[in-house]
Length: 81
Image (cartoon, rainbow, N blue to C red; front, side, top):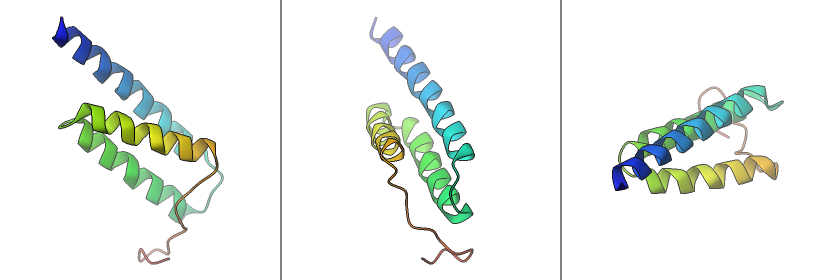
């Protein structure tokens, strides 16, 4: 039974990650901000492979930040603010 619950959680987190990636792609923000958000999503995706609960918490925080309009600083092409 626990395995079924784990598989369901993977499905939920996977669906939410897809939604988050789509949202980031459509944001009207500078490219540097979009890149920073994309990197955050990649880190969350990698974390899901090792600690699904932590990845879900990180994704919740990121989605809340997006909902409230809190974005990382715009970065230049060399990665500096």
